[in-house]
Length: 513
Image (cartoon, rainbow, N blue to C red; front, top):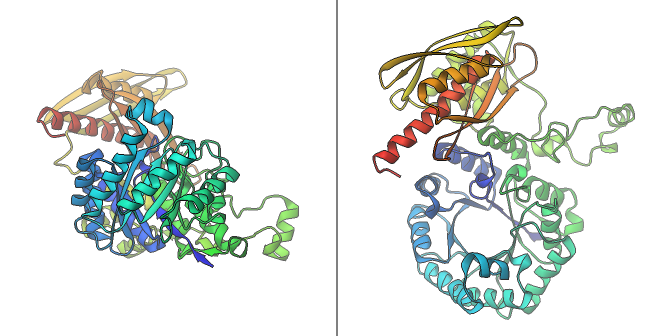
């Protein structure tokens, strides 16, 4: 059987998913969990794209030593220099160089001729090869690129030193048969392809990314790129958990295997879902909450008699669990630490103390506290801005509402040491509180998205509120907060977003980009 390398781009392409927003520390937590999952390559980011992306790649390169750490770069010296610098501390490193090769991209985005693009591909790879032996090259939008021209560019990239060639279906246009044929064509028609790894990178615009990736494996690809939970640009990327379990479940059909520790899949999925704010649909293949649930009577009868009647995989194979450990106010820090560790979240002693105190407070107000509550609290503590960073602090909040009363909120905020109080009305208590806050911090702050979910079931469930606020320049700031009170969770999330916007504005004014 052939070994299939798993190239995880959750931290790069996945974070480009509309709605996803990860801090540098959150990216490190995910990278460490991907290391436990035993992925072969982690594409940690696109260093030139932002200071945050650069610092994330740099930190992951220093802290994560198992997988190859990869950085993305256009076929430009400045991009490659940034990637080299960010990867400096990586034990095993790769630079992923790309340039668009489809006619529509060359005409409208690059505004360059075929010869110019081919030369840029060659020059970019050649330049990167001075610094790193492991070079991946991608002809962006390959599935809409003329086949002969694509092969010419690939030959040039290999002659310049590329060791992996990736064939991206950048806009999810390809169909499985034609994508498989394209992989086969490359292997049969690129003169210097021998000894070079062929990779896939598919998007899900037509819902075919996994099918296309598997078709590529059948036709000779030995690396699959994708993301956990399938997050990514537009409709997302290839869901790696689906490819991995397809190969594990049907390994004889594909004559292929991976080195993934599949028992870490569910944990990895849950961690990324919580940190990115991208919920996993209940009926999502492999890792959805309903993936191993049976409601129909005939199915239940079959599963009780023999699980294989309706389950082609064992829930244990992916580390799936429907159980929650129950923790109360007497459980202490160790139980919380273990629950967080199992979820892939490592906190320092000070943060654990905060989590423990919040658990005790919550346990006084609800019957029991389970794993999902603890993870939500842990993430909330992890993401909390320090008191020194907070520009806006909540001093007081009073809500009046009822079926014959216009919802009214009085909010007292301390901004840079000065207390300001305002009252707002709205269609509900959260809307009233938002309007009161807005009247203090300024009309330039607009609440663009608001999402409320109960972390666990029951009327005493911990509330998780995720919001997005927009400033007057069109910048979007995402934040979330948890609290046993829905209104408090909402206000906390809104203030976190407002703080992010205010801090960003101050940094811009001080010339810090």
